[in-house]
Length: 249
Image (tube, rainbow, N blue to C red; front, top):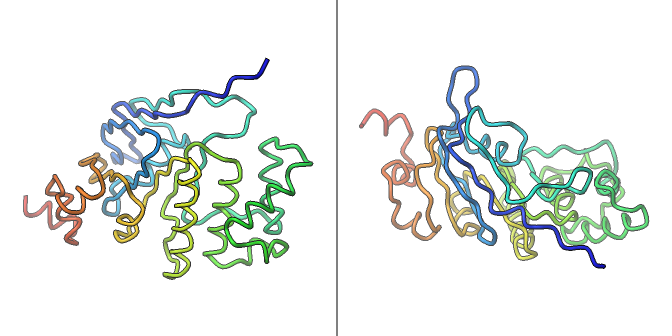
């Protein structure tokens, strides 16, 4: 009898989620449901809580109050069905190929399958020619492409990206954008934080706008950029500093 495919992790529901640290509220009663399909980009000024929101959703940190609920549970010991790539990705002390093979080993992929899957992943991100170089000597853009390959080859249902092109030159950033688009096209839900408004225009289907730890606005990307619904979002798009907005209130 054939085994049934696993139920979808999505939707992901955040119910009144708050997070505080050292006496400061970083997330303030966030209510949010993330669905399949659309590319979700999180925007907001520095200190708005964007990276913390991603870490709470991914499960790296627990909310101080409220709940985070996936539609289905990940099976203990099975490969993770959601992944996260950070602004500064962690590289193991191995070759480029070794980083991928080790990730496949940890995920429980049979040894006989690891080489082929790793080679295919490197080819998708354009790193096949440097497969045997130490990962830690790669450029920032190459390391980010390797981190994306490492996540993508395990076919996650959801991929969280925390400023994946920060500090990269424009050419490297566009290469990362192309990979992110390809991952989306392959069926993975993308949830990404960025400060690059041009990048958000190119990649987002919907925008989550955070300000002061609150989810101030959620809208289709075109609506957000042309008709922001809140004063905070309008000021952000105009380049206003948060303290000027507060002082004017």
